[in-house]
Image 1: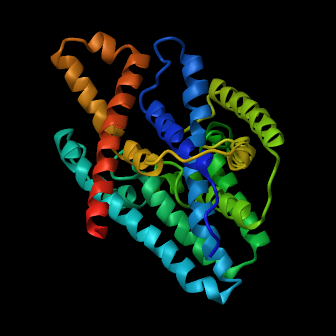
Image 2 (image 1 turned 180 degrees about the horizontal axis):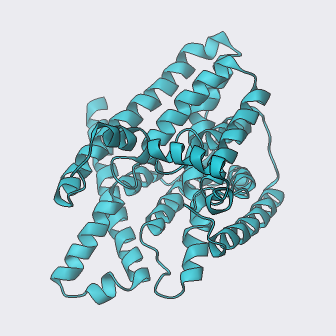
Length: 346
């Protein structure tokens, strides 16, 4: 397999992406402007999850696809992919266990049947932010199967078609649900998954984009990539504001302009030189996992100190407080894990 090159900008962007996910769950600009908060949090912030999916496609699934071309790579690339899936499944189980007491305390388990549990485990996530983990697992498994069964061109058409179906059930649902038949189709989908931003409609296209960028040897110069990203981002902000103002959105994870925006963003990051922050990868995942817990801790501490008005109701202060707590705990955890790994090797 090829040697890992300098991907410092990609690694370091993980931290910003993780903090954007925190923003999605804390609405940092809500105290100042609902419109500004929507544009920054629910439009610009939507680059975070696709970025992580593209990273997985680039580093995990791209070698798996190349293994089909070269038997010499087959065993190591396949094992790498399955190792990633096993680690992600274990992480999902651990995160589920972490938040299970909170679900009990908040009485979220009352009245849940087998169907509700299956819906949460495989699509919605066992806590509101954990949907990404079953999505990346399902998306990877789907792509790994399709890569063996169909050509790259056909696979590209399939994932784009799936994304388009998901898009109509997300930012454009209010528009397409005017038709009785289409509405019935989406109601069937929503009976299985509360949203279309899942491992079937949402994840595959971004995972595949990561694979194509890695294996297609497409490279765009830094300035052109940045220009493409900014133009696409402007289009996405306009698209998001339009669909929001017209009341079309059931959710706001999927936009048409999100596809080119992510392509150019990833190309731009690949064009940059720089060293990786030592614990960027570990910290970013930890921030993603624990930030809802930090939201609860910040709210609890603010209430105990009778400072709810500052640390909770003031949205920007609340966001920064949650970020600070999440970063601090994540760095402690990442550092502890490195010490444990070091001792095992020693």
